[in-house]
Image (cartoon, rainbow, N blue to C red; front, side, top):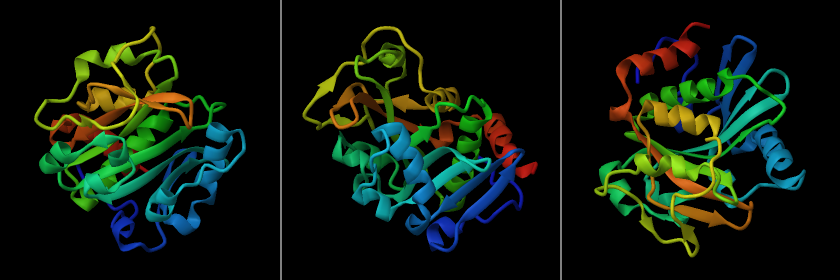
Length: 238
C-alpha cells in the first residue's frame, strides 16, 4: 500500500494524540482515542443492541474510526500490535498467524448504519486502514466478519481459506463449517477479498450478538500495487 501524500498524520494513532481527520467529498473520516469513542459507541449500540450499550473492555485499549457527514454512518475499532493480544485471539488460535505476521492491525466491531447506501463507505474505510497500516509498519490486517445466525453466505468463502501455515486454529467452544444457505457477503468483506484476503476454515457461533463470524486476514504483501494506489488515492485527492 502506498503511503500517499500529506493528508493527515496517521502517526498519531501510535502516539495517542488527538487523532486523524480526513475529508473525502461529503464524508469526514476520523480516528480517535478511547476518550473520543462516543459517536462510534452510539452507532454500535443502535445497530447491534437496539440502543443498549455495546461497550466492552477492549474499547478502552483501542482507537475508533468513524465516517460521518454530520451523522456517523460507519465505525470500526482498531488496534495495532501482536495479534495474540486482542479480542480476536479469544476466539481463534492465532499463534501460527502471529508467527507469520508479528505486527498486525486488528479491525473489529465494524458497523454500517443500515439507512446509508453509499458504496464509497467501505472503500473509504479501506483507504484509511491502508494509511494506518503503512504508518504503523503492520504486515497484515485481520479481524472477524459477521454473518447471519443461519450462516447465509458462508459457503461462498470455502475457496478462500488461508494457507495451513498461518491459518487460525479452532479454540472456540462452538464452531461450524463454512456452509449455509446462499446469501450476500458483507460489503467490507467483499473489499478485503478483492484485495487478496483469506479466511479461517471454520466459523464461530456468537451467542451474544446472534451471529456467526469468520476470521479474515489480508496480508499487505498480497495487495496488488495498483489497487493499493487507488485506495490511498481516495484520501490523497482531497
